[in-house]
Each structure stands twice: as C-alpha cells, then as structure tokens.
Image 1 (cartoon, rainbow, N blue to C red):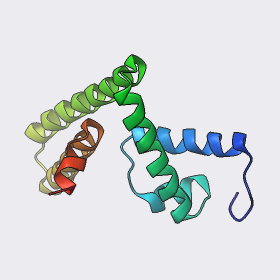
Image 2: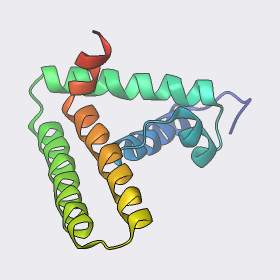
Image 3: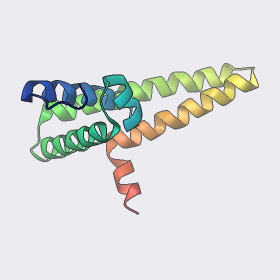
Image 4: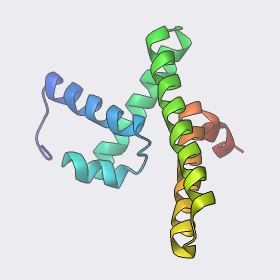
Length: 123
C-alpha cells in the first residue's frame, strides 16, 4: 500500500489498524510500519492522527473512548500483577531479568495510555 494514493476507506482502515496496535501498547512507528506494510513516516503521521482523535474525543466527553482506554489500562494492570507473581516465584536469574524488563515496558505503556508520558515528555 506504499507509494500509491489511498482512498478514504483505505486510509480509515489503516488508521483503525494503527489505533488497534497503539491500544495494545505498541508505540514504535517502525514496528507499526512493518506490520501494516506502510512507510515509517506514514505510520508516524497516522499515530499523530490517532492521538489527535483521542484528544478530541476525550475533550468531547465521549464515554465509549474513556471506557475503552480504562479497560486497556485495567488489562495491563492485571498483566502486571501476574508478572509480579511470576517474578516472586522465579528461581532463574535470567527469567527474572526478562520479567523485570517486561514490567518496565508495561508500566511505560500504562503511562502512555493514561496520558502521563505526554506530560513527562514535555518537561
């Protein structure tokens, strides 16, 4: 799909695909580009468009959006809880290090979904 002018329907389909990846906590534009077979600059453009939609939707008080984001945050909290349980039970140092790295990445994702990382990036 790279290099050709997209129809409105194609662009919207790609925007939805980018949004789905972003809701899964994927923020890397290069990764998104590879997954969707688009250029990295296009992926970055779509990420910005999705963030703008979220901002506008959030400002308008859309309960569906707020509920969806809250559900994603809650899922990530549950996963983090399970990772902490695994870490406490782990006897393998290498596995424990992998779990710790995953927890750190998950916490970054939670901050991003909550909008905290945007505030921190501005400092």
